[in-house]
Length: 166
Image 1 (tube, rainbow, N blue to C red):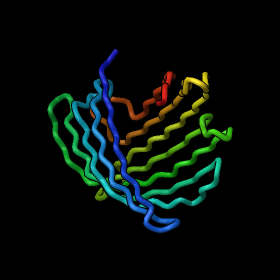
Image 2 (cartoon, one colour; image 1 turned 45 degrees about the vertical axis):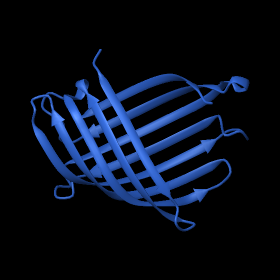
Image 3 (cartoon, rainbow, N blue to C red; image 1 turned 90 degrees about the horizontal axis):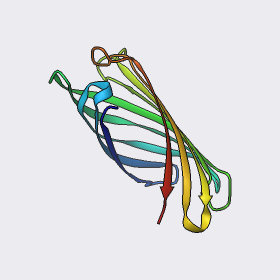
Image 4 (cartoon, one colour; image 1 turned 180 degrees about the vertical axis):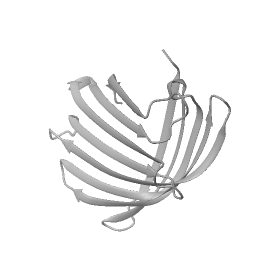
């Protein structure tokens, strides 16, 4: 077992029907990846390509700062481009049974050979609708062309969570 923590906040406001703006921040720590801290701060544009009652498809692009401290106390700050494609599909009228897919591509601005790819897939299934309890099964695949020493380029995380919404 190794410690890790992760928090991500995103504020999106759709200024026009198909185009809007986003601000985001993220902080994480992951012993498995020799990461003492990673702090991301960015902004970008978001387009709602498809927005239907039970399905959505969004595309985003932007720029972010990437501050890292790894276990050997090596510190770096880089500028990365960030782009994503996100799809959501609901399988019922209540939008409680969901399939969510998002893929991110994040190259360094000054070196496109140094990039990260992150694929996030999540299936939420309602277990007890009267109590708002559901089951989340998620798969995250991460690829980093330049990870810290002794850290693999590929990483797969599978999680099952019991979720209560109030």
